[in-house]
Image 1: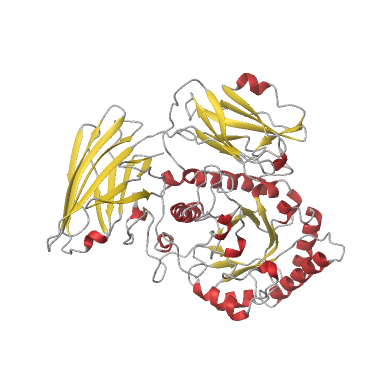
Image 2: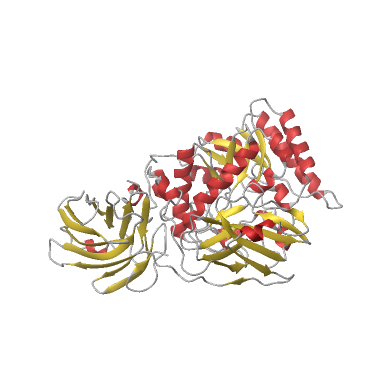
Length: 600
């Protein structure tokens, strides 16, 4: 059905979510593979040199006991020397890491710190406290050490520990692909993937993850690839089209686990807890990556994974019909990051069919032109509403780019690669249906232009209650949803109202179909869907005798329209007895303010 994940929800008022769920959970029905574990609580900051106490680490591990198979740490000093033993005691498998930093200070402090980390990592492994050994995290991305020195540390660890314990390092997929010697030295490839930092809209995040994972897997050859980090923050600043909020964070957590199960991929999710110390004035989102709050409470919507819910592939891989965008073929950049920023670009395409075209990008860095995002991924797709994002900072000094050439090209065309070339390959100008050239001078502060909203569906809902002893809840709905083929074999409409669920399946291929029924005691309902030329219009009047005058305090209502291969999660606004409960956010799109929710 693909709607299983919305059938258990919590009772909440105010801002409501399709992914709302209780934060209290009995024994999980499903246990995810792994989480990144950093136990610092509010007021604790590793940059101050704090040494955690053994009971503090043990307490935080016990809080998440039974909620993950593996934990991954980031150091084996400053209180983490026995983290592996504590993890094993709590029932986890332990991926222990030696944190490596730069060694270029004259006093040799950095070198000594790295050597202590390596020594402690080896000691933990020899005591039987580690199931995987990670030598450094994003060392190459930060430029802390050259690849040859990192490989030397990895070889030192491997030669000093029992055979059978995998040794690796963790870095972004682009960095690993560019350093084959590091991948050759790794027993398992551990890649970090962040659609959020690439500015990808939430509904396309898993497509981005899948594409980048596939690229790293190809580069890894016969070696197994694990996800070392991926996540989505629940608060902070947007990055291009990537919006951090609790609904998107819960959706991504559910989507990643659904994807991992369907693809049989091992994932370390980032991260177990929020950590206040990571926030900066420009990046407040760094404090909001946790599945749990800093006090250990599961965030809203995060229980769905543990309850065994998954999303269907049609939702994960955004199998939404392409659209023919109005106007003459054109392309514009709607987000140009500040000079030196690690963020990518975003834009808007018009006048093409989104299935027939893709976007190719070249950036100019110090006079040389480079293909982006990667040589083996020289294009990015165009969303059905014409938007697109490109991760333009994937290596070297990409953040210092001063010019962008961005092209709309046929989807069956492979743009020629540029690797520091004097100019953009000439042939693409004759192939492209549209292109733009944008200058970004040194010191540029960045700009964002909000693209126009394309409404592709709507839903209006009014809810009223009786105050009688045997209260009756009545909901009336009307709206439209687009479909690619009006002769498709019906649609499924699912409605959540508090803890009461209705499920209707119209059976007609076209015309009018009416079905009664549901899956809750003492309920009744009728819904009709009419196939039009380009849309299906629907209307419904549902009611449920709940026998509880307080039931109207449950202010949650979710609606999902599932046409064959076209999942549409309908955002809505809700009015209860004249009181507006405001904007409801779905796990897929966000409703606009007003009387109607709109898909965007």
